[in-house]
Length: 329
Image (cartoon, rainbow, N blue to C red):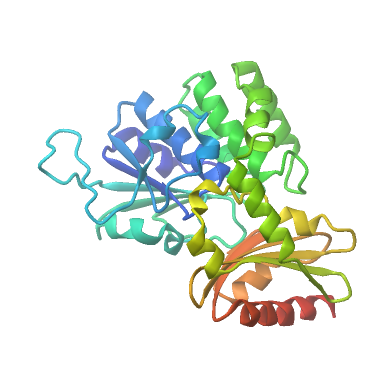
């Protein structure tokens, strides 16, 4: 149920900063844009700032270009360009904790009210107001309900924000988090004008040449362990330094090793900085990768989670295998 305090602060307050986790996926991007749309309809001043530039894969979304990326010299003011605009309220979408905002945390003030809208199993309830629904297929499903609670009719643009979040987080309605509500909402979004065929074409059937070449490199790194039940793929620091990673859309890359027959857990490792490994985990059947990620300070969902491990790629694989092996035993 939507907290009344959430509706009240959106209705009565002004000056909102909207953000989400680093390396935002479709649910994060669709979510921040949908909240921004609602605030705009209510006449509220707001700005969307993310730690990283969003993937160009989502540029079909209206207002995509209004998403700002954090920089140390970022100035935000709607009235006077010589003054820094200080938001009074923060709305965090699709993030289990504040740490996942990375550098955007530098924009926060001590007296700022924090609204937490999320569906991750690992959410730490960090907000002054927490709207957390572990049964929701996507955070945009929850935002759909928030918008309806204000009695504002949907239009095509916001329908596409919400649909994008749902279709990404449910894996095209393939994952176990897909619910009857996910499908009911999607049907209503289609009736509203969401271009579902167009979105599918952009997300799943349009790739840059760099993305396909990157996928080839990734699959060449494939390692199988635990009698065929675990698969690892990686981008090392040398590859990531040599290539413009912004042109490589890695969304869904981890699902390729997971699709191998017999594989129960897949891990995609990226060494963006030497000695610092960012890891995406996916699983089938009963293996809960959220529990594995939590061991290393990360989190997510039972079938999709992430974490970071300091050390070499070999170190990270060894540590992950140790935790994964415990679940098999």
